[in-house]
Amino acid sequence: MTMRARQVRTQDFSEFDLIVAMDHANVRELEAWPGSDPSKIRLARSFDPSADTSEVPDPYYGQYSDFEAVAVMLEIACARILQTLS
Image (cartoon, rainbow, N blue to C red; front, side, top):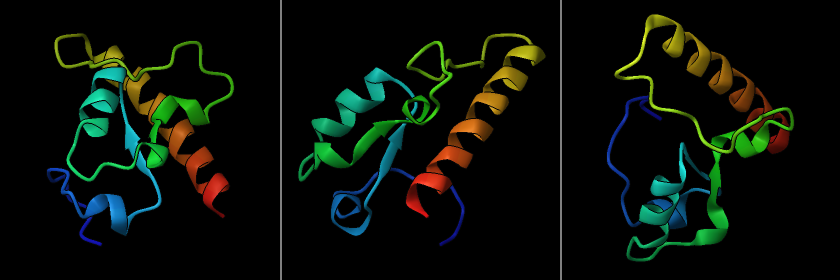
C-alpha cells in the first residue's frame, strides 16, 4: 500500500472490504459509482460511539483549531476502525 491519496476506482469495491467516507455527499457519490457495493461504504464518524455528528467537517476555510478538531475526530475514528478490523 502506498499511503497516498488517489481517486476511487471501480475495482476498489472488489479489492477492499471497507471504503470510508467523510460526509454524506461522499457516500452518495460512492454509492452511485459504477460497480459500487454500498455495504462496504461507511462514514468515518460512524465508528466513534461518542460522535455528536455523523460527518467530518471540512476545515479548509476555517481556523487552525478547526484542523485540530478534525484531526482528533479522525484519530478516534481510525483507532476504532482498527479495533473493528482486528
